[in-house]
Each structure stands twice: as structure tokens, then as C-alpha cells.
Amino acid sequence: MDTKMKKRKLFCLPHAGASATLYLQCEKYLDGGEIIPLDPPGRGRRMSEPLCETIEEVVADLKAQVVSHLSPDDDFTFYGHSMGALLIYELLHEMMRDGMRLPSHIFISGRNSPSVPQRTRLHKLSGQMFIDRIMNIGGTSKEFFENPVLVKLYVPIMKTDLKIVETYRHPKREALLPVNISCFYAPDDPCISLKSVEKWARLTSGTFRMHYFEGNHFFIFYEFENMVRIMEETLSTVDEPIPY
Image (tube, rainbow, N blue to C red; front, side):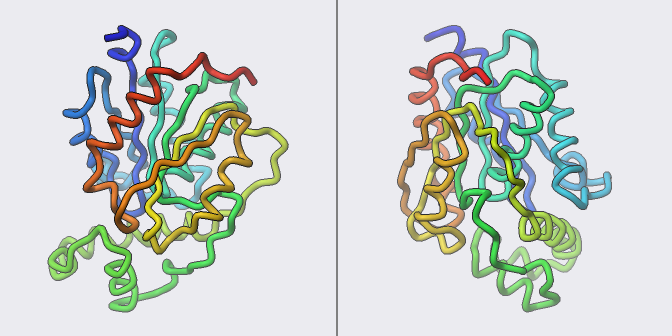
């Protein structure tokens, strides 16, 4: 095995309402390498910290975490689902602004291009109406929402995350991301559309590739092994980082 592959760090970012630590279960499928979950404040191991209210706050926090984990010779990449994909996009632009080294390839899923406005306003719903809409999307069991302690913890995180996502406005930028992008896509995902996902290709000066899966918005829970396999196959042939 290439020694570079053994040193690779896979930074994982969470979807709305979740902790990126859920991706630690993917480590058993890695042929070497390390998964590093990047959680913003208020979730996972950082549950006691106050939630970030803006995407700028979240990105600043994530960038500081990346800096703390990277050494000059580290090979690294990013994966994010749904909100996590949006956070990667903004994080990479922030890293570019600071002249930081970027990965040659990133992986995303469950998210329309950031250039496509979000039409939903779920964060404005309250009570059972909010819970019903979240349950319809999937990813969280009915039993979870029957536990008042868990609901009390979860709903504020989910609403704060959704507000960040649903009020996001794509900045007018001339610079494209100098990275290659692979997207894991499920046609039955009710939260996105193929036409809007394909617009990611307009945001990069690198390549954009689609990998198709069966399932809904949370198909990833059943496809971790296949996703990691695709990541490793892709990264084994990737060229040097694209200059910017």
C-alpha cells in the first residue's frame, strides 16, 4: 500500500442536528488513514459549549480545528453530508483566503449546489409540526422523538443548524474552488434534485463526478463501506493539489 494513503486524514463534517463522531464507524473500512470528526460547538464532545448562530462562526471554528490537526506533510481530504457539504464549501474558501494548503479532492452528499437558494423554512416551525417534518425526512427514529430528554437536547441544535442552512446566501465570488469534487447522490432524496446537485460543477476548476446510490436523504447510513471504497479508489489516482 502507498505510504501516503496510510497517512491520509479524512475530516468529516456533520449534517444538521448531528455530530460528526458518527463517521468514526467508517474507520474500520479504511485501509490505513484516520477519520477526524469536526464538530462545531454544542454537539458531540462539545455539547456543553454554546451553539454557533452564523455560518461565519461555524467556519471559523472548523478552520481552527483543521489547523490544529494538520502537519505540513499530511495528506488530507474532507467529507460532508447535507449541511456538512455546505460547510466544506465555505471552509475551503476561507482556507483559500488565508493561503492555506487545500486537498486535491473532496467528497460530498445530500446537498444541492450552494449557489441554489434553499426554499424550505423548517427552522420557523414549532412543536409537533417541526418534529413531524423532520421525521418525514428520515434519519431519526420515532422512538427518539418519544423521549422528552432527547428531544429537549436535539431540537435546539437542529433548529439552529437549519436556520444557518436555510438563511444562507451564496456570496458572489469570482474564485472557483481549486479542488476535484466527488458527489454521492441518491435520486430518491427528497431534499435535493439532480439538476441542482450538478451545479456543483460550476463552483470548481477541477473535476466533478457523481456516484449513484439507492435510498433517501440518509442513504449514507447504509452505504458507508461502499462510500469509503470509492473514496480510497478515487484518492489512489488523484494528482497533486490544484494551484490557486
